[in-house]
Length: 446
Image (cartoon, rainbow, N blue to C red; front, side, top):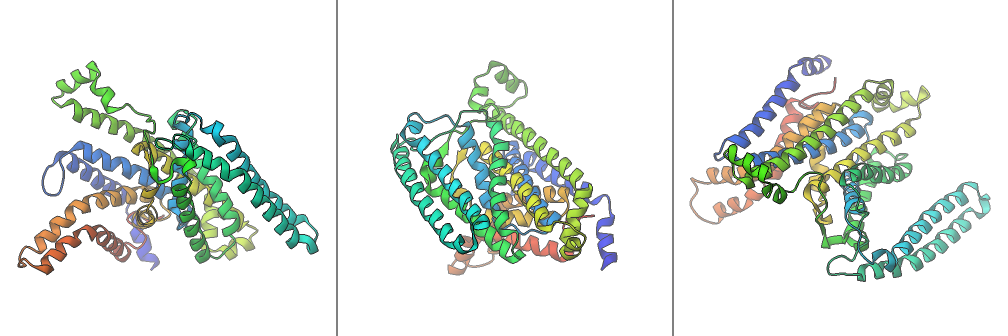
């Protein structure tokens, strides 16, 4: 077994070859037009941009699982929290919202936090015989004060220009500032979750994070004063030019003509290239920092805890504290990716946060790429996202080819209608093949 693992990680050319194959796929998507590829650079770059964001998500999950063995099944929730940051930081303020109830909402939230903090003090420092009654009194009194402040304020905010807004709006600050704020939002939530759940067994941690993730998404869907809920928020500012502005620029028009391209096509490619540059810089910086951390004494300690918690604890290591540390860092990276995704889409729609896409698929990316290896996680994320998009096109073509000999009828029609599910079948097949022939991923941990 040890020999096979050594052989699996022995080839230094595996990662460069796989990345070269990945580059070739995107070049074929941009230059070749046939039944398999679109022949459009706009499509190729659009897939690449979301692949780079997915790579950052996978990097956060890889830190938690690959470094420390923590199973976070609530990725979608921390991603959604990060996505809230561009709305609250970069969107313009809503006129009349703060005067309608903004300060009262903030007061209610402070009362809620104060209640939790005071309850913790009563529980830990109060006399033993009065702990339970004191805790109940604090929680019940805090709840009623919180609702007294919160409910009227929310109703007033949601009634303010409800057809178009009905929310607080943002601060109107530069959108790039919202990216680290998104990371802070997710890190703060992860700290709260980790303080409670990281003392549990690994299976209980998975259940707890799954529930927390769903709660966060449910809050975003239902609290319209925060981000309009299911009514969505559009027009989130961009850090790159708008296509319509480029199409009106005489210099850009002249450049398009000199390159023999239409202005519309070149403007779309230019904007996507700008996004790709930003996302690639963020991804490379994160991988660089992750590699430095992984090769440091801290990284070796984290892997020692992952491999044998009992032995690490016997050597005096604070296992729970280190777990909390890496859990917060990983969720911060996921929150950063969530803010980047909302900025890229220009749309905040809580209904898009599907656990299948933003938890299960991210885990597939990490497992296929190679958990514990930062470059492997990035490779797996971009590759799986490319296949996830292309299988939607390739699946119906494959089903049509396979059912061609069949006579027209119910069976053939059923198979053709089932082509929409090829994505899930393809991901399952890819995962099984990788686990069978390369169980440590395409680029295994050294």
